[in-house]
Length: 308
Image 1: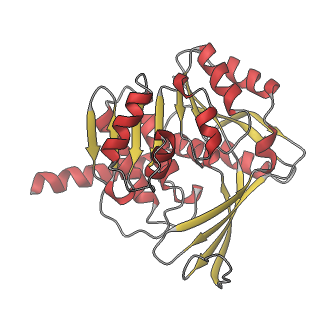
Image 2: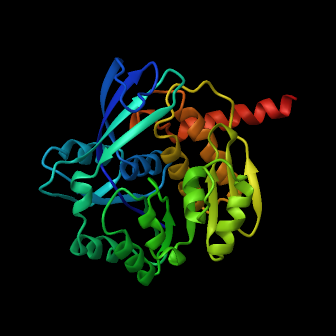
């Protein structure tokens, strides 16, 4: 079983700030880094570091070859990533002293996904494979339909959430992985994100998409799974330095576990553990832990539980 991640590749400009700038406000940065990013690329990197066979389909601009090379070094098959004419997508990221972030993205070449690329990438995979999607590229509607027709299992992370997500053929998705804000948007909740209990959100989404499994990430509180069973897994307690990339790390490790036949609870434990390690480090792809680190953290946790 292989995973095809059809997603964004971005150049991240990361600024360390005392507090995230409000509208009309200018703040000074105490640090700057140029990093590889994009939700799609981050999730491909996480899948590779978790040990899953993964290929990445997407677009970069003339300035983005180093992003392709970087993922290839991680073991990601980059045969379906093309170079377009627009600049590579990029993100402006503010990270405050508590590790919270604010992100502005520019699509760039991520908006150049065309039907020939979709056709080539999807037809190279079979019904035993998984398609992983986010909402940072063009062509989502066509990608979902083509993958469904191909018989692939479709996992959709509708991030960043926008109203166009509601117009996608979401009834063909098999697994949604979302944070609380994205879950509220997909469920059509009129209340502010966080105002509805995650368990209620999961039930609403399950009612709307009865054939799909629902995973809602809850940050420091862990994650919630709703499928044939309902379960919630707590996250390890850590001191967060930078939360950028935590959700992408969770998704990569969760899917990698499912490709090996792991049950949802085991997959959730690995995913929240990996995400917890991620937030203790700065950066995006650089902060994603490797499989041996996650294995060690899980062993330590198991010993701690036994000793109590």
